[in-house]
Image (cartoon, rainbow, N blue to C red; front, side):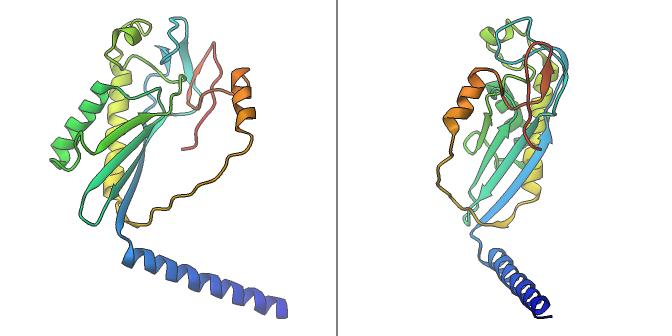
Length: 211
């Protein structure tokens, strides 16, 4: 009986503290934070994989789907910054310009070249053909509009999601040490693990990133 009462008091205390923390975030937070996630997989077969510089490195199916993940932060003065992390080798100038063009058509000058950043995770296990530069489109046998449209549409929609769910939140910074990083890098070097992505190939390994 005593154990049951102690457990009950513990849960009541937990509920009380959690409620206070939530009320504090809602009423005193200085930032609005929004998050979004959208599919950018694109063509999954018969397309050269980005960045291998090997014409024989052709995708042959989907292992895990690729996504764009967006974070929007707005300060008390209304200034905003948008960071988009994509499951791709990199973004490209034409992808970024097209995304911003669509955002301007929808939101005016709220999101521009000055506050939107798009960054890839440097995976090579995704479809290529979406960059305008000769060194990249040679191995992809030209510009692949399916890859381009999938990236643009996915990035745009992930930003729309983040914009629509902006809510008061807090930002925390943590600093620490990640153990055994050297060992993980050595495993990568010998091919035991590979880049985090989602388009499979008949000639390379691929793993995944969480949705």
